[in-house]
Length: 83
Length: 464
Image 1 (tube, chains in turn blue, brown):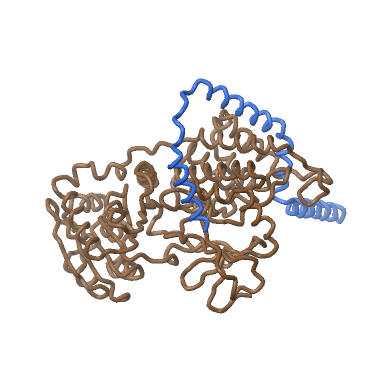
Image 2: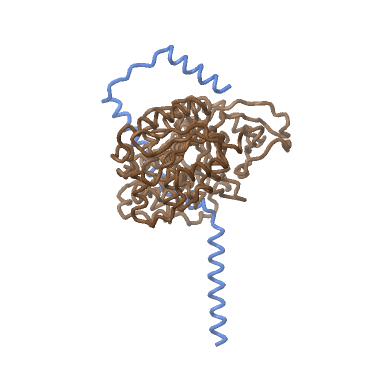
């Protein structure tokens, strides 16, 4: 009987210890680690999307350039906001 | 150390880079010396200029640091007319905020900087568009995993996927989980077909499976340099993949009774037209700077307030109506109108540490004028609220109230009573006027054409 009690205590202590260890895992560490796992995939995704954009731009009609006066007006607006 | 005239925002304590204070009704951002290097880089790199120019970052001016002992800079950002929270946004508002966050991160990467956090709370709606309000969210680029990746997925991707693939009401889970919906919870709720979207499979399902994983020894932001290196192209690809995941999520509001309310025959004849005319007259006589439209439906009357020059917030308990209202507002472009999802019988509570991180609905700055059109019968009959409780509630809001009384003989009120016992003998126009006269001065009353309804303009005695 005593043996069973001791066994239960050990099991309970093990559960508590595992729970405590889980609590010490930084919630962001899994996301951090996961990004390293999928780094190859995301790099491929970047190059694929870049190439696709370049190919698409070859088939698109060229858009008229923004007039110089408009660009200057936009820039002055940005600067006044930044102040 | 700051002077007694100022109050530090209850939500501003996590970031050692700075904090927000309220002084004389204005919100200021104090930058600490520890952030000086990153702040300079924000300007030197041209990132501030580009993001403010594109309307993605709130513009600010630097003011004197007197009274702010030890501060590196004090910023006075453009003031927000109204503060809202992600759990009050509809699907497209959250989606636009997610895409804005990714556009900011993409631009920051191309300027040698990155976002150090990405909570949805860092965005607010200004002139109808989401804008980043935390100027101190940027840091110099480090070629290692993006620290805000998990936060972005919990705050944006998980609720968007749940709304898109399950039910729009699941967006409210963000109110319980202030640091975003745990990915394990989201993936358990999502249907199996969620896995068919490749980027959801990667950023939600595989991500969730690795969320509790411990880092290998020696890896991590706090470890020796070089242990967790990533290429810039990998970080850019991560943003591109998240963008693809978000863009692919769609949600079409169904045609509910509320969403088609004004097209229904019950409110036919000249009723709507006359009501618009009377509301416009009320707005003209009060000339409010801010208006809350309670039970706004798809914002027909909110638009009158916005057109009259008032910063207007439309509240409705039906997420479909809010979605339709927002899409219409976005189409019109730059209107002073913010549609929000809010159930008045259970409005947003104060949340977070000491209940001070997220303000309750009634703690936010009240408007100059409240519109309560076609609302009182829902509160009184559908929600059993006594007229005096409704009056007291409106009394806590701004100085002016435009309220519509809908009598029991109205077809819509009769609908409410069709399946319930009439336990509202006191719900009459006479009692309504008597009760409201105890807190308001009735300035005008206008019976509406082709309807038994009456529209009142009242002055709140509490604010008089």
